[in-house]
View 1 (cartoon, rainbow, N blue to C red):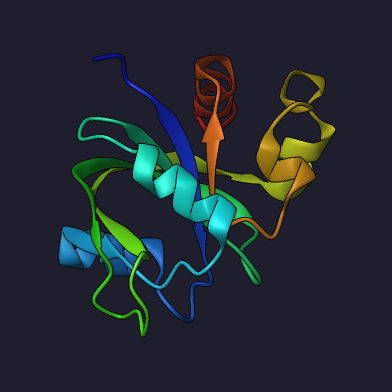
View 2 (cartoon, rainbow, N blue to C red):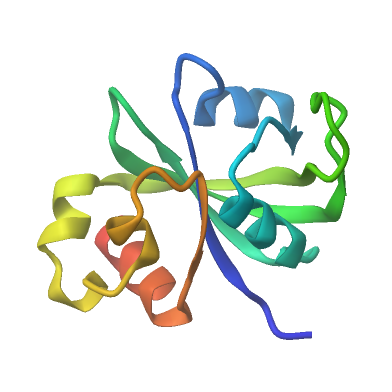
Length: 136
């Protein structure tokens, strides 16, 4: 199976990159957007995931990996909502800020930049590679 690439975002006050590193892995729960749910359902073990801290940090700060495909979200009050399990892989040596993402013409097509409220979004491999380079 081909590796897919994703970006998930979280408010650091709710769950930060440091929390994921401390925990090692976590169930990515609480997503209540239909488009994001479609993306969660498409995630597969081995997929690479950027961890973006929103609100205060506003930057891609680390790389995670999907370790468990979609399963029922235990935090949901109604059926149909799903979660995936993520594990921390490594931090980016330098965070890649939202301003950097927006300023880079190579990243202009990123869904995240067009639908910034979406908490889970797919990335093209070229976008993933470019962000890794920016964070080196």
